[in-house]
Length: 141
Image (cartoon, rainbow, N blue to C red; front, side):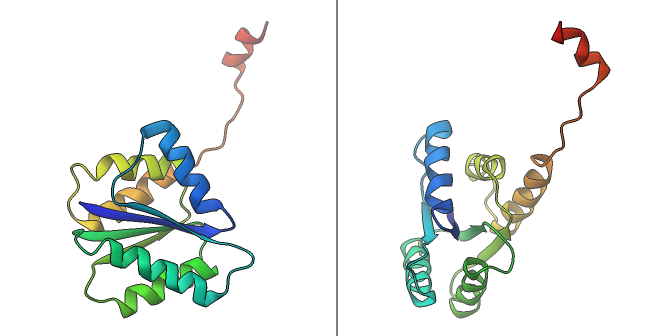
């Protein structure tokens, strides 16, 4: 199975984990790593390294990050470069729809690169702008 790590600023990661549990139950091989205001970069590095090591038996690890170029993203890149014994993919811009699809897809997607591509595609599908149409106006009465 592919392991999943969600990381981000504040309580973003644990918030995403909480929402995922509410909607889909407790995920397997899943860790949330928050980067709290009081944390140092070393704290974040330590927790990411611990999370990756805990998934050593996984066929790969997908790290989902809140925003591009933030500390969690940069530390995830460093971990990927340092921990070459693991096949690690990183996707930034995680949203709940993406996370749900990734979690469900791990049952049949066995390659972490394919799962990363699926995550990006699903993230794009989940990002929409609602436009009110005249056809919907009929139902407002």
